[in-house]
Image (cartoon, rainbow, N blue to C red; front, side, top):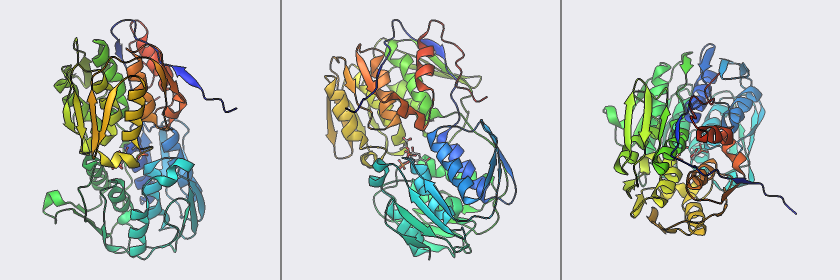
Length: 434
Ligand SMILES: O=C(O)C1=C[C@@H](OP(=O)(O)O)[C@@H](O)[C@H](O)C1
Ligand SMILES: C=C(OP(=O)(O)O)C(=O)O
């Protein structure tokens, strides 16, 4: 018999009042690691996230020949000669899409594999793009092998990135080291998660790489990276604002107040958009002295929102919407069917299992308010499904979450942070980088 562990999601006995310090951003940490590996000298990364996705990136880079010292959240990355390796992508989009272009620069055979569930995530777009640039690759999805020859000519490539922004980011991140750099042209429905491409471009520029984007006079849907050196940088990683959204949601659904310190004044992280969403739903949101504070209303309003640019927030927003006092429509997120799991189907199924009324649309979800009841909540190996269930469990007694440990993909120790948040006077939590 297979034993499925269930975590009894704690109910908030009273409005939650807490301050929660979150560890570093997954997206920024994994970009910093790639750029440091390609740099012309050693870099440091301070406040790095240590989680399954970032440890998979660290392990892969080490296997490829990059030296990474430091066990905790301060890392020193020393580039080395890239050679043969076996890479485990787990279920990490950033690993499976950011590493193949870097592996193409290696002088060796790089074998990629990952979780069974990762095999259905869209991937061939980036493999075909690399083939178009002259890279020798066996396979069209996991498992696949990159046969590196120590150099990539680079050039112009046209892709359909409507399935994931990570195809564009992955190509741009390594392209300064291609002989001719790269010009990536997108053709197809609009590219999702554009702030994540902005994050890529900003970090490349911080490393001294010349990038031209559609926003600064380039052609529409076209990004160009000039060939050149990648500078070593002392990266300081922002807290993960997408992970912060679950904790802020706890204030919104219980009528309490939750603060997150070290909130950046300016950021490309999509999690920052939770401020506007929670405000529209009736919460009070303030940012003062680098601390974001959310105060929950007596009841939450439903919301009609396009999440195309910030799809990562969908599970949190869906949980909030399921507890609102009016209907909500979440749009622009068809690409979530290719995330860790089909998130639209998963959210519909799990919220409806608790008595909800969620329907799936072509590009999102429609959520009608209903009185919810307890029951099992399946996570589908998806960290954000697990945290969405925890939000509901704060006010719906008897929600039991399958495989809460899957939150370690981007936030190890989620359960204890969550439980500490619920203690009376749950201030100054310990998810902070050490
Ligand atoms: O580049 C990144 O770090 C990410 C881009 C987005 O991917 P998609 O464009 O596939 O949604 C986001 O959802 C993912 O969590 C992280
Ligand atoms: C879609 C996500 O992850 P990945 O980087 O694996 O695509 C996510 O974290 O919501």
